[in-house]
Image (cartoon, rainbow over the protein chains, first blue to last red):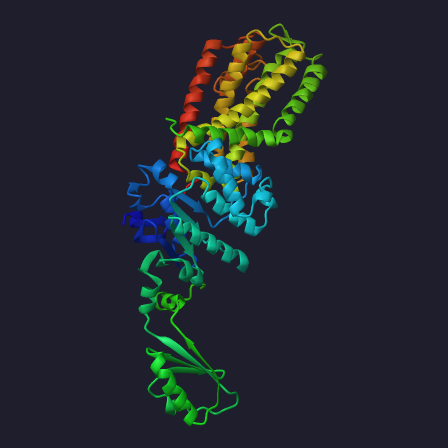
Length: 308
Length: 254
């Protein structure tokens, strides 16, 4: 399969700050790629380099096999981007802004009309189309950003934190919409620091930290790099616990009546643990099996939580 | 040079619609200010300065007032539009579209040129109604458009360099406005001491006013052809600088 986006040794310095350090990354045509990383990891710099807004210090970027500098008209026409920062035009109704956007991409008003009408309807903005940006709610602005990114029907859609600051309902609506776009054949690059978003939507995830790509793979691949789950046992309040003696062979922690045991094979360990604890007269209130999440992978690889 | 014609026309159109959408701020003030100038300088001071080059003073100042409006409006349009786009985060979105730096620069310059020209022609009509002769209407309109283009290109450069409204105001208040006034709006530079007259010849605004005086009321202090050549040179020079600066991405690209 051909690469939709090919980043080769991308390096970007802002003064003394190295935002991106020799990043190499390929995104295949039709892939739903999640770029996961904490704030300041270099995600936005990377995507802004792809669009040409950020000038890389060194490195090369190709979009659909074309160099983004030499063939900027071609590569930019293939990309639609919804920026994290919502722009705020004061002068024009959002419908006019969509027509302007189409025009910038070389699409005249007549050709753009049908697509703009559809996008306004799909994004639930039809009845607000004559409103200016400042009259829209935060959620509407976010939906407008996505409509604007799609106005020239790009093959590649880049979404920089598209659900940042939106309510749960809208987040789910946007997820459904993004899934349908992906199913229609678009390549999607999503940056997020919401683990569940990446887990749910992306066919491939790259973890970026401190300007470097530190791990890449499918969600399942990444999870398999940590072969541990946790068994969480809630112990009845006020009991003395003999865990130092009975759990010598396990890696465990105990805090506020919660016993957390790490296990590489939780299915076989669980019955043994219940038996051991029960025979030592400790009363159990609840048991939960916590499987490896992408968050655990992130924590292991970076040594910090994604929200840090 | 321009390949994305639809994009170029769209951005130029957007720039023109932008200033028309706030016409109370962009068109009306120039007309009101000019009427005040005509009243104060033309009527109140006419008894003190009756004629310059055998032309009644209240008529003599009118071409300068037209040019002052043209310059102020064309500079303000491209400078404020670009700065506003920077501050409202709409510029990064524009810069990733398939528009080249040349196409973007020329679109902004066209926007400012149209605003300068609309204001200039409106004031010209007021001046003609106030009794100003119009010896060469075609040249007059051509000069208004050319001077609008020069200062729109300058405004684009200023808008790209400025980071705040304060910086923009400083450039306009301490450079553009003084140069306009010292370019001979209200006087002939022949009335100045020799040294001041020579310094005035370094001011490009002088040639704008001089040429418009020649085209309207027929007073030519400096060669009209010479003034037009200087205007064309300024046009090419400032447009090139504006395009090159846009291409570097200075203060607008990370």
